[in-house]
Length: 247
Image 1 (cartoon, helix red, strand yellow):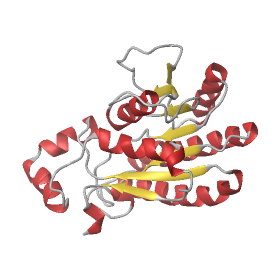
Image 2 (spheres, rainbow, N blue to C red):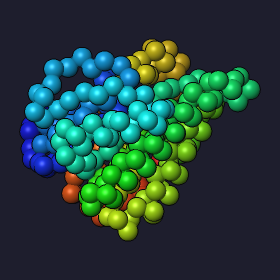
Image 3 (cartoon, rainbow, N blue to C red):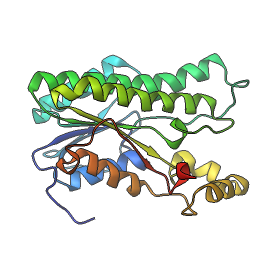
């Protein structure tokens, strides 16, 4: 991707940034001039220029770790303009199969992690007088259901409503909150299920464009929401899904 300066003088945090969609988003934002804090519970296999990017390990299900992540960005770069709450996990199992521990694990990471990232970032933006952009990663399965993905659908539906409600609370401060709802994207998380011929055919048959997307498709949407090109956009759920929910 050609470098540009859309995000010059901006500072961004991206959670779940060691691979897949999160890594693509972080690279798009950094390539557009932002200073970046890459964050993940897993190690980042990428060399960074310490003047413009750092890595900070963080378990988003732990409030104190998210608080420390945000403080690290402020200590290193002095501000926070963009918070991308991308970290999440997949989960299979219908309502009759999902046990209490699995339910709690998915909600803690996918929904509570997004809550902590949104609230704590917004508090710092308010304190510093920054009209920032908060971008949450939901899913088409936060809008439509899928059998045998009960906990995941529930958590991502929560992210949709969290984003809408937060956008109303934060609009008077000039802080924008939006969510991206990807369709089926080729990542490590979906690699195994997409190898299954029946599942892969189901995805293709339900996606009007006829194929799963790439991480870069989501990163491009995130760049738009992070930049001033979307300065009048808040409270929106942007579906990047090959037409899935238009059916």
